[in-house]
Length: 275
Ligand SMILES: O=C(O)CCC(=O)C(=O)O
Ligand SMILES: [Fe+2]
Image (cartoon, rainbow, N blue to C red; front, side, top):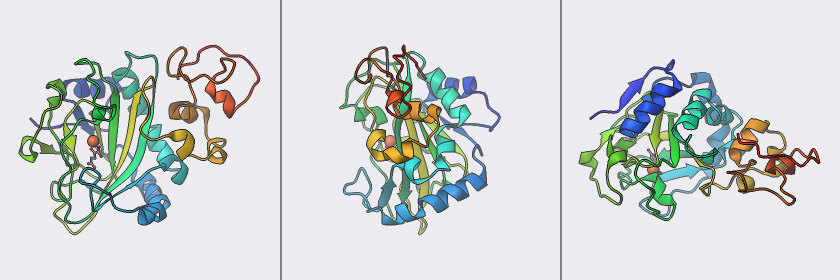
């Protein structure tokens, strides 16, 4: 089975449906090239300063650069892309709220072996979520073309329906080949992994993921994005970052105040405001 490709005028309902069925779908050419050019320039110093990974899962010749919201103002447009947020709202609509889980440029360097095949939701200490209870809606935006040779993400389409804790080999997978500016959207339940890069070029993707707001975030947005920067951000983005309650009682501050009050104090006691 191949990964379905949709065009950039796709509706969120179609994206969410493909995601629920196959666990992965590609929307071609969703991000404008000039936006990616800006992201690339803004991230270049941080990427260059990022050490390669310490283990096989992170990738010993792979650089993982986080805190995209702080480091790349242009990346905020990807984080809040309307099609992605609408898809996440549908796909994760069984919970009160969803939030940003992590932002990470993944640069797989030349001659890298494939990453082990995994489910991203194993990050939650391998908790066995009920089958069909989706906890993540994930994206990888191609900042370079993704080819089988340069390490395009490998996916086992349909494995979102499979049992937990399975092992797959690269031969069970298909490459998420896509052009720069396209985006792979995949669930926390689908088995996948970064591909082997057999070329002399670096493959760069922007992994921007969302999860149910009652779960912990992988990237701690409160500490990754300095308060001075957070104070300049729009409320919609702040709420997505976690300055919102995860459910009726989760994450309030002091006297039952909405977390957004930490940055935008009105002094008012407010009721629950989901994103
Ligand atoms: O870099 C990729 O293509 C996928 C990375 C990945 O799946 C992960 O780090 O969890
Ligand atoms: Fe992953």
